[in-house]
Each structure stands twice: as C-alpha cells, then as structure tokens.
Length: 180
Image 1: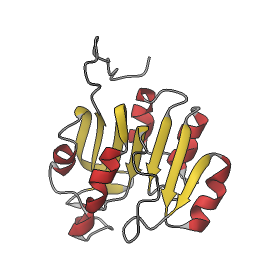
Image 2: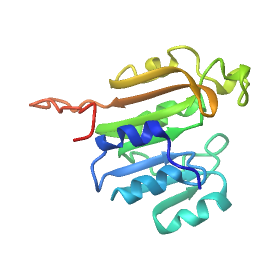
Image 3: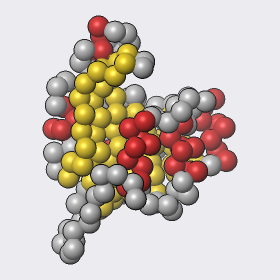
Image 4: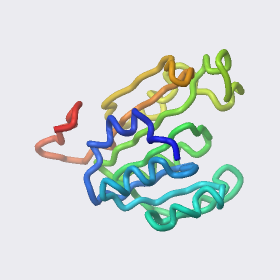
C-alpha cells in the first residue's frame, strides 16, 4: 500500500482524534488507514469494490460510482474533515463542500494544468485551472494553498487546506500552522 500524501500528513494535526472523516474516491485507502490510525471514525467512498473491501475493518465503506450515480450518503451527512486526493469531478464539489461540518477541515490535493507535460492525467477535464481550488473553497477560511510542480514523482498539483467557519465563534479557533 502506498504512503499517505505528504500534504495530508502535514495538515492532519488539524483533525482531532475521534473526528468523523470522509475520504472521497479513496482508492485503496491510504488516507482511510492514516486517519483510522489517528483514532478517527472514517467513511470511505470509491467505485472499486475490490480496492475498498479490505478497508471494511477500519471504515464505513460505500461502493458507489459518484460520477454516474447518486451520492451514497444520507442527505445532510456532515464530517469534521473531508479528504480528496488525486481525483477531480467538478460537478461533485457542491456535495463535497456541503459534507463539511462547521469547523470542519477540507484537505484536497489533485493534478493541475501543466501535468499534461509530464504524464497522466493529461486531459484538461481532469486538471485544475490556475487558482481553481481557491475559487471552489472561497467561502471557507484558507489555511494553506499550493499550486506548482513536485518532483517525486513528477507532477503538477494544486492542494488546499480550508476550514468551514463556525458561526459566532468566540474566541475564534486557532489553526496552528505546525503540529504542537
């Protein structure tokens, strides 16, 4: 199994142990297992039943084609964190953002324009436009954002950590930029 994303690991200190975490298009579950090991309650969604079957011991698994079928979770399901990496389906963004609870953390990382020069995906339909994640998360508080080239393996990415505000929070929550 591959290691969790450096970006997700770097910012996972913002997700409290015991938090409800949703991993969208989780694949073989590198982030499912990461957050489960941190003591989180994880819900996993992917269309590949064989890939997610081994995750059933650590997560609430939903096998669903979220591009061509209905969203598999009950309306109004909210999570303390939503994770999505190496996946882009723009029509799903409103659903993903709606799944984020007040105070919840969005951890998103995927391929960006430029990736077509170094490999796959190369179809612009699956590559973020410059600043696109900032636009999508515009109603959230941006904690961290990167848009650029990574060398190992070579790829162009955008990645963001954003938090849904808590109405009338007093004092405001502090988002530590490094783990304690």
